[in-house]
Length: 115
Image (tube, rainbow, N blue to C red; front, side, top):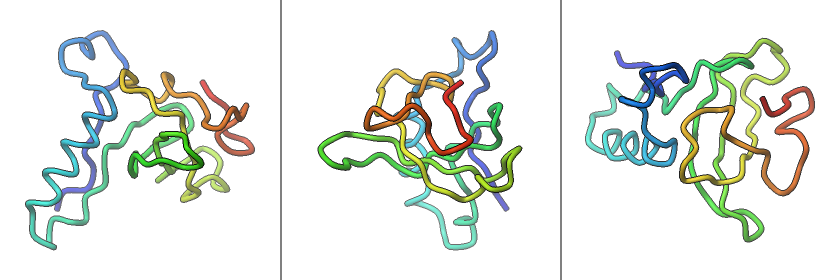
């Protein structure tokens, strides 16, 4: 059973294989739409970043601002697991550290600061 569509880590080879998060999300959605229910256990795109496994749930507009909708599948702080949060949309962002909290906030969530 597939379980994650991982995002290329922010290491040297990322320049060769990495795609922006927005494109990765579109690739995931296109693939997800074509598989049976048995394969729909997969989550993605997912980054194994410093705070934990960050999942890009979607891209939407909230209060007139285009944003990434994210949540932590696993986290160093268990209180953060499963709580949705928003990052300002950036079509060039390829990793969690490229993201900034949406709506002018200083933090994504209490206890979850930008990297």
